[in-house]
Amino acid sequence: MSRQPLRKEIKATRVAPILRHPGLPRCPSRTNDVTTDVLIVGRDSDVFGEHLTPTFPKLRFHCAHNSAEALALAPPCQILVIRTDEIFAGLVAAMPRLRLIQALTTGVDHIMALPNLPPQVMITAARGFHGPQMSELAFLFMLAFARKFPTVLENQKNKIWDRREQRLLTGKTVVVVGVGRIAEELAQRCKLFGMKVVGVSTRTTAPHFDAMYPRAQIAMAAALADFLILLAPYTKENHHLVDAASIDAMKPDGVLINIARGGVLDEEALRRALLEGRIAGAGLDVFQTEPLPPENPLWDTPNVIITSHVGGVSETYAEQVMPLLIDNLRAFMDGAPERMSYIVKSA
Image (cartoon, rainbow, N blue to C red; front, side, top):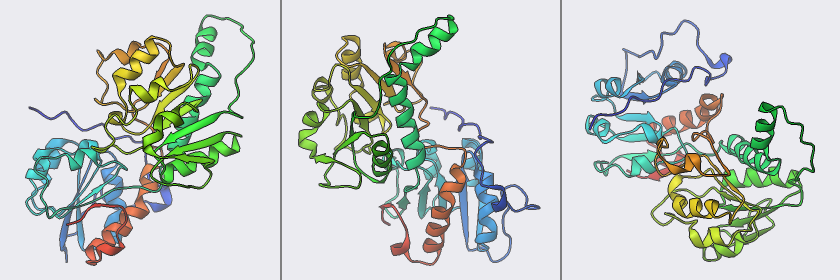
């Protein structure tokens, strides 16, 4: 089966100009004293290469913008820097010297699911900086449903003046399924809006949360939610963590928001609830199959707002991830894995 081309490079996503090094060629490489080859795949690969080359004189960076380029450059490389959804088994097979995969994403589910992942390869994730963009997307969904913004846009299109009472976020309850650093940042912002914040987690407390429920009581927590927000990582244990029972427990005017991973949610159970009017709406940024196929019925399901898995990205993403990338590469090259952050799989 042929590979789809990698996503087009997004020119707007760039490291701040002061981090750029004028005069360097695109994705420059070292020729002297090189000890390790690094393959960077996907959009912004040139930006990463340009910034990292002066920082790591003993690393040679190769930049690939599509799967064909990646395969051609792969054989000598011991380190792979890539987004989880852009990796494929053929690329790993083409890297016999591979020792480290540094994901440029929070999730590593596609990487961990590779059938030919060598046991000696370390995997690290890129985490700890997605709070602002994820929180803002959650608020986009909450405000869009609270203020009925799709109707507002339709009224504008049809030149309809419709002045009516507006639903406020203040006083509403947000239930967050999966409480990590992103959830803490989201909860802090919710409190500024005067909202009550409840978590579903293995943790018993967390900053800015008013209450915490264990996983076994997820339906009980969902019953409290004006907005049920999914932030749990996708694992085998979390497959359909939010299922028909959780959705059925929600209020009729409740809204479900999934900015986690598609597999965490039972999409068919959600669709049935929406079609039957048992909940008010759903904001969906992630899906079990991505890109979401045109024939998927969710596109035409009433009271659904769909975004294209944009929750974790920003126009400054390369700048956000760069400090972590530098720290992890430096620790790896120093032979000090204990200094590396967000190790998902040890060598």
